[in-house]
Image 1 (cartoon, helix red, strand yellow):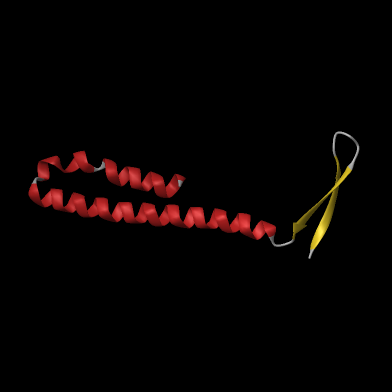
Image 2 (cartoon, helix red, strand yellow; image 1 turned 135 degrees about the vertical axis):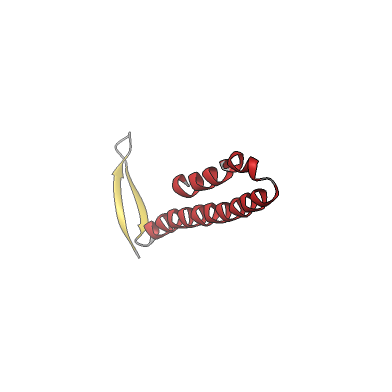
Length: 81
């Protein structure tokens, strides 16, 4: 089932902790899920911002460079997510 871990507390008493061998899988699975969902969100945000920039470029090309910030922010979400 699992390995026993013996430890002494401040009073010198032995405490027994039971940690199953599959416990780190849950922690690493949570990290993987966080990275995957952050990158999916960054990709979705980049795609939607790209659609908005293309629509803005068609309607008013002189304002095109002002709308680069959503793409940069979505890229930051993908990188630092």
